[in-house]
Image (cartoon, rainbow, N blue to C red):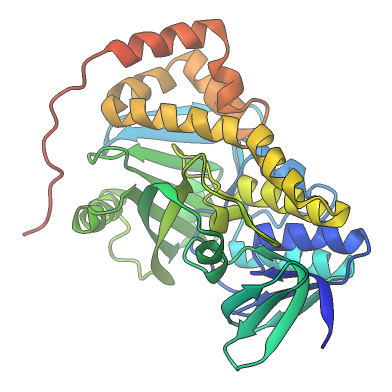
Length: 384
């Protein structure tokens, strides 16, 4: 039996990033993926500057739009729009973006097997064995799990989650007049349910329209999406894709490794808690894992995540707590020059939330917000 240096489970941004780094370092690297590229993935597809920097030397980003205007609303009201003199976000279709990453990993020397589902993992101190759906086995010295938060690798490692949200999304082909209406502009709507928001992301001849809220409010989240689409005037347009997914954000002390199995990206519960932005965390954690495997120091991956990714996640949890309690304050702050500037800095990758929150004026403002009492809330409306 062939024993691979590295087997990566899952061919999304996290897994393909790990494979690219390891293959370039000369490791015999195999990626197994249960689907086949190009494949649709439920995702807003907005790349922040941190993501663009992570792939700059790997691929040409297949941009469908570059956004320089953002419209903000508070449950459909209090609308305002801000514009920047350079792109704030780059919009991609995940089937195209992931396929470019696949090609780059293969060009670096990784092998890819598609339509392969991993059912179980066993390991001893030297080798990890992956049992596949067809009954065969793959052996590796190390495994990187990138098969999502509900995948087999997250269960094997024992990842624990602090926050679980339900995201619902539509991919809507739109006629030329709607394309022109949304070209270069996205919409963010702070919803009526605590911690919820909706979005419209332009991607050429289609729009990605979605909402997200805490798990356990499924009917309220579905109602939010219906009302959101209706307000946008898109109700009569048939969706090309209508999908949902759970996003899971890890406990800070949750494991990232079990022996010779590491988890990255969604499988590790690595994402920004407030915005639920996950692509940059997938790309960066994948690169860190690939480097750790190439260097033969798996514990370094855990230290690197703690040093480079966890501080921003910790800041995101703090922001989410404030957003849940006082969304109207966040909406008002984004209308100010300082608030808009911070939003742009985050989106362009020029400052992380933890870096911003160390600035003295922001620390003082957050301290004041945290002392404000939470307003009484009415239950989110639901359909009869």
